[in-house]
Image (cartoon, rainbow, N blue to C red; front, side, top):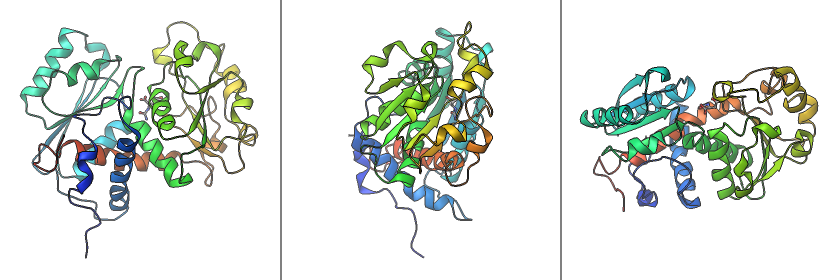
Length: 326
Ligand code: NCD
C-alpha cells in the first residue's frame, strides 16, 4: 500500500522560519504551504491507524501558563500521532510572575533539550520573549491579546475545505475583538489570502488600532452580516476585562448574538464558525451552533490537529536532518 503521507516533501524550504510566533511576518505562500502540508494529516487522521513516526525520539514540551482544553489536547495529540515524546506543563497563571521568572522558565525548558516548545501565556509578547531565549523552535498557542497563529491556520484550512477559494470571500468576525488573539491572527491570515474581513463589536470591544487593519469595522451586526460567506463568532473574554465592557449578557445577545434570524441576513449558504469555548445563548444560539449543514465548529477542531501536526513536522525538519531553514 502506498503511504498517504509524503516523507519530507521537497517544498519544505518554502517555510524558512525558526518558529511560529504569529501570522505576522508570514508570506501568503508560506501560509498556503502549511495548509497544503496539513492535508496529508487530515487524511491520516480519518484512518483507524493514525500513526506516523517521523518525530520519534524528539521531545515536545507543551508549556501552558493559561487554561486550555482543545488547544492543549490538540497539540498533545498532534505530537503523539507523529511519534514524539510529548510532555505537558500546565501552570496556573496566578503562580507565574513576569520578567525574570519567565526567562528562568525558558532557560529551564531549554536545558531539558526539548526539540520544540509550544507555549500559551496570558501576556502578549511572552512567547516571543521565550523564543528569543531557547535554541529550539517555539510555537505560539496563544499569547495574551496578541496572536494565536495555529487557530488562524486551522480556521483557514476549514474555510478552504468548505469554500475552496479565499479571493473575495466575505468573512464577518463578531464578538470581543478587543481581547481576541484569534481575531487578530485571523485578520492577518485571511486578508493575506485575499478574503474581505469585516469586524463587528460594540464600541467598547473594538480595538483602537482598527484603522490600521485591512478590515471594515461594523457596530451593527445586521449590516456586518449582509452578503457574508462565513460568520465567525467570538466569546466575551470576561477574564481579560477589567471594568464593565457590556451592559449585560442578555443585552449583548440581543445586539450581537447569532440567532437563526440573524444568520438569515448572510448568504443562504453562509457557514458558521467559533474557535470555542462557546457561551451558548450569549454570542451564539444552540440552534445555530448545532446546524448540521451550516456549522463548521467541530470541523475546526478536526482541522486543528492536522494543522498542528503540519507545524510540528515542518518546524522540526532541521533537527531531524531533513530539509531545513534557509
Ligand atoms: C481561544 C483562545 O484561547 O484564544 N480558544 C481556543 O484556543 N480555541 C478563544 C477563547 O478563549 O475565547
